[in-house]
Length: 295
Image (cartoon, rainbow, N blue to C red; front, top):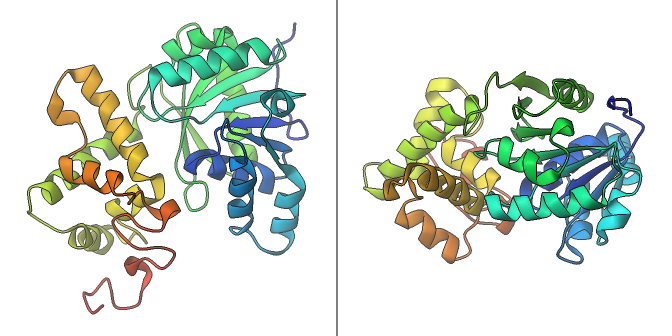
């Protein structure tokens, strides 16, 4: 069987209608790619589709509505798909179970991938049952970022990276290939060092989230700071990634700090729930004067 090439006219199935799954599905559908959005929680894909529609206007919104299909049935989502791309929480056992199930149901020639932030590709590729046609990708927020990192397993065919690159470019992302497998890719390891230091300073009382973000935005000229970015990612996702690093190192200090765990337990999950480090939909960092400390 010929190795598949990415075809923008063929369906992609996005599995997991959480924060990043919804954003990736939005990026695909707005580019005109037929996109099925599936979640095991009944009704969640429709809610996520409605949210995604609020991110587009005019002709783009019409294109999004025409191409984004919410699915509560896995087989319906996978039907005719050239790619099944998993976006479930950052838990190795969970991802492996989902990928194994999808691999059994997906057409034999189709591609599979995982949106993993910290996990390496090999254990996920093995679980899929089609390692030669498998890749990892780690997306920045497609709404206001363009970077996506690609990682292959040693048993992946090099053409899996070609497929991933073509898909990324079709949705206006800039793909970078991680030359060897490593936990956290390349940029995400840099982000992890920043994130870990930000959380330490807040936990130990050296600075507030607001002042850390102000400092970052003033120095680098970015529209949002590290704490605002964590809100966009979702704080539970941040904590799950930190947990993976703690499992790998065996060091409890690599876990998310206690204050972040308390925020999550209180339902302060970030942008999607309306409150995290900031209140949404009108976070303080977007207001005139806030950067200068006048708000």
